[in-house]
Image (cartoon, helix red, strand yellow):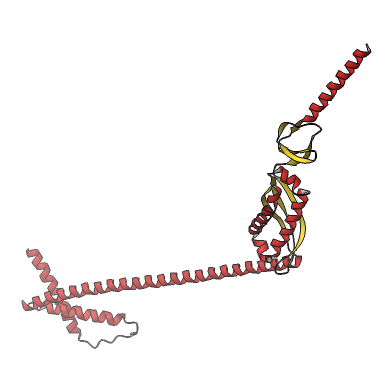
Length: 311
């Protein structure tokens, strides 16, 4: 029985030791993480996500590194610009570990090293620019910081994907001066726009007056043309009447002369009476001549009516 119990104890001890060794040799690496393996303190290989086997006692897990993209906060710090303005700035750095061995063994405390690197380069880049450039060219600052930090961290197995400046805070007096300058610029633009509006209004007004004058001139020209045409027609009608009277006189009809003279006589009297400067009309004329002329007109009318009846 003692021998049996000793064998049993040995088997149980062996089984326990085997289980412990198996547990020590099996390593499960979660997704997004990578582990380094050290054998007697020297790096040998990297464990990928999933189930991995190592040599127990001889091997051990060294560094556990997160290979997902990470964010590093750059604390607020004071920066003196090229034109000696004191500003406060902070930012963020996005990076990813590509080589776990380099990140674990090429630098001590990777995040602290990257933080100090970002802070010093932030002061260097922003210190080489004027205040106006800092406030208006953030994209250029981000690009320059990205290039500098990415080049410096390549030896550490790190890829810097983005660098963003979060806040740039100028001194209060500069902020107030900028506000006054912006207000002055806006008032200047408003005055310019108002002047442009008044100028455009005057131009449109002048154009309208010009068009009105042109239309008035066109109306006068059309009226003059119409008056000339009317006078021409009146002259043609008068010429035809004179021609007919002359023909009647040639044929020996004396009543036509009396009609012509009487018509001219009545026209002169009408124009004389319509004159606004004449208030009193004196007629030192022979009444018999006027009556004779009117009588001649009546004779012509009777002759004309008589011919119509005979016809």
